[in-house]
Structures are given as structure tokens and as C-alpha cells.
Image 1: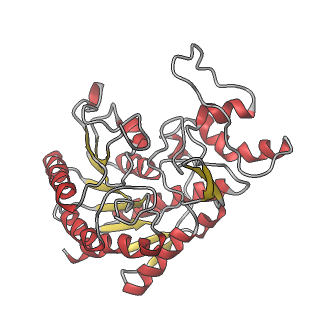
Image 2: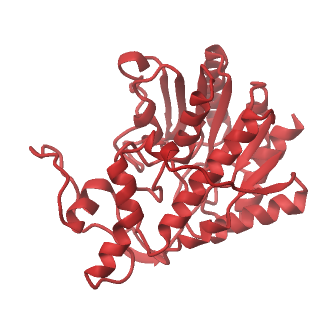
Length: 343
């Protein structure tokens, strides 16, 4: 399996974040991608390929053009105001607001476009964001050219970014942009399997009214876990997309037995859909040692997971999302990929 990698991921480096009332070292950091690449080389998974550059239109086909431009230029405005550190909001768009007009001030637009304080825009974040999108699109092209599978080692991740909002360490939705490109290339049906601990709220929102993309997610119960406001079992899609959205929210403490039962149901639904291509939002923060998550999967479970995904026998694009137990991160990610390859 080929891995797509982009050194530009290092351009996004936020040293701190707010966690449980304290300022702590950031969980989403450049070391994550480097450790995964190191493990890929150690096990000889396959060649590591540099990402190609793609026009920005692939991103704006999925995301609001104004938001994309905002992410690209926010830090310049931040510095012009004499500020340092990462550009983050101090307020947020509230429920019941009678006006949805985009504010003029920088702080107002930060409040409008992002939903948390864990996703600061730094001076060079945009290079990493665009590079991550290019990584996913390069991997998608490999599938189009005939590869059985490819791994987009994206950083920053993407599945929390919606049409016109970003957050949860995610700026642009790498998986959704790749999916849309795959459809534009002629695929009639694409399935997205999101196995990150946290619900892929952005991916769900982007495809919620479409019937050419099936979104299936296994994740922590949003009544207790981030992102809190999407991922419930009764969210089934709307309009043309009704019936093409399937969520499996699970309680904290879920281990392989219960998690794999949900996986079986998810794979059955995907098989019935009959996608031309499968895109996997690959989060391994389901690991029992993850510092911000509460599932109990072990390292061997990720091998089993990869084999189960391979049983669908579909061209498969793996797109990197979460996973913050850095010492084991490379092992867990590559276990999924080697499980898939060995099936």
C-alpha cells in the first residue's frame, strides 16, 4: 500500500490548548505524523509518496469560499492587530441568534467560523491545511489510477470541519474533499466509514442531503462526548440523503466485543449499499491508552479491524484523523493498514 505524505504538515504547530480547565501541551502535534511515517518504514508497508498540488477549487467545491479564504488570511489580520499566539475566538455563535450575517471584525469572524478554542490559526497553518488536502487528493487519484488501497497521512485532520465551520483540530475536511473529487471523477456511489472516537460531525453535515455518499460512523455517545451536538442514532439523513446516514454511538468504556458488533452492522450496511469506493476516516483514538478518549481497543484489535474492512473488497482510501497516544500511535495506525493488506 502506498502512503501519501506531505512535509508541510509541520507548518501547523500549536504548542498549547485548553483542556479540562487547564492550559496543556497540544495533543494534536507534528510528532503524530512523523511517528506514523517512521512505523510505516519500519514494517515496510510500501512506498511513501510525496503529495502533489491540486487547485483550491477541490476544497471550495465542499467548503464555503469565504471560510476557506478566512482560514488562509486570518493570521495576517491577527498580526496586523498587534497580536501574537494563535488566532482563536473569545466568543461563539449562539443558538437563537436572529442574524446570521458574517461579522466584519476579525474576532466576529473567528466566532462565526469556528466552534472551539482547540483549533488556532497560526502564521503558517494554511500551508499545512492546504498540504493536508493535497495529501488526500493525491491518494484519491491513486485509487482512480487503479490502486487497491492508499493511505493519506493527513495532518491536520479534517472530519470535524463542515461546510462553513471548523474546529476539533480540523480546518478543512480532507476526507469529504477527496470523496467529492472521487464522485466528480465518475464514481456513482461512495461510502465513508468513520471510525474515530469522536463523531465526524463535519463529514455528516456535508453529505447529509446526498444519496451518492453513504456516511457511517462508530463513535462515542455525543450526549457525553465531543462534538456533543451530532452523532445520535436517529440522524438518518434528509431530503435525497434520507437513509444514507448511519450512526452507532457507543458508551465510554466500550471494548472490542461491543465495538466490533457495531463494526459488523456498519460493514453490512456498506456492503448493501455497494459503493464503488470506500473512504475510511481512520482515527485510532479508540485505543485504551488515548489521553482524551474512553474506548478500550487494543493494538491487536486494530489488525482485526483492518481485516474486516478488507472483507468488503472495495477500493479503499484511508484518511488519517485522530489518535493521541503518541507512543503507540504509529503501531496502531499501521496495524490497521497491515491487517487490511494481509486479509
